[in-house]
Length: 630
Ligand code: CUK
Ligand code: CUA
Image 1 (cartoon, rainbow, N blue to C red):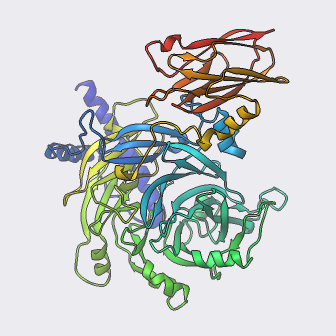
Image 2: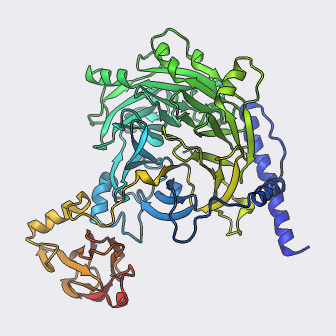
């Protein structure tokens, strides 16, 4: 037996153990038993598929461009990534809640201003990137992203692909599910405060009295990135989505018990989907029917059971993903512990809010798909694709057939089950969360890669699998390792995007830095100057490959030094850097941009600063000295 054989056997044993572990979780919740299937069986089917699929449409030749932009959550890395689809090439990383060594994000004064009250927080946990829309179609303007770990929401400007706004959401804890209003346009971003805490969480009232704990639904103005209003709910909140009429938002709840332990969280037979009426919420805010808390002025509405703002639709225990079908007809709640998904008819919600029907009357089918349904994506042919976490599969099923079967018609709604590798969370189709769903590609974001890549130590990458769904059969065409968990992604056709090649000099990203320069009497586009302001020193310099406008400046020990660099290069792709050796200060300065960074001159002596982005044949020579007098 070769070494290779041995290691694959070990992997196999390990996988059987892991499947047992997950099977147990399922049994705990819904009394269902995982069908035994080994990793070797998974791998062999995948290899067969790949061999059969000789003409690889996913291959993008060197120099050719991808058809879609993918926006990937970077999970615990706190960032967002841009992928090319179908090549699955990583095109760019957008630092958001993290600090970034390459660009200086989180370190530069410009990024600290954007981070605002959370500028001191260096970590984030991103899950749900979603693009702004007009009339249910991507408009290429913004991508919004949540930070579960520090209760924030940020906005990325798609013209420059940089974060431009960040908001810490008050009165709640752990922003999880996030989506945008689709129709008539993205006026609001909606997101869930997942964890249950007292709204006034100041430790003065009883910490143990769970009856004071709440989860809160959050509605944010997409343009100003300020809170519009919040809604208190019963139970907690997980994932959310919007309709295509501009009327309703819906969220899943997996802890209607308001339990504090796993056991307590899974005692009920059912949880629910809570539906919010936007018009009723807006009217309540207008009529002043709200409270405020914690000294902020955010209107907080009461949407608990019995309220006219919401309706609660019971669904099987512990639903997870909530997905709107691109024809605007259905909200689909994914069962997680139940092998089913619940199809909610959006058309019936008016009658539900008018109290003409009962909550469960809105559910028009509950098809059984397999073990651990987490998220559902859609094509343009009436099919849905649901990830089965426990089965490590994607179930392709026909929505109308599932509804017909529910009504007693003898029809098989399951079109295909495809093994994926392994344990998928979200899956996403190209344009699939808009009216423009095109049924070309599906990405399965798998939580475990196990044996799919060379082993890299105990921590393994995730596996983002690209699946061709253009034909009758789903086919895996690419395995893409990803570091730090992409929970969610979205794929937008390149015709929707208009990224800039150079920074406009009037860009708001660094407008305040230029305003400070003006107050110092400095024209950053033509002058290289040192301004001393007590112990604060501002050093203004230009950069044009391969030199800085200033190659030497002198400060005193203990000065707080701010270096402001303006990149005068008008050449596409010529980014300079500024790095002050031994001072923990480095940043990117894009063509025509101004960027600044502040550090303490806390060591006497000579310190070279240099350009740390390779820009020119004489890039190594692009440097200068800071002289620090003792
Ligand atoms: S969640 Cu991670 S797999 Cu945060 Cu959308 Cu479902
Ligand atoms: Cu400028 Cu390297």
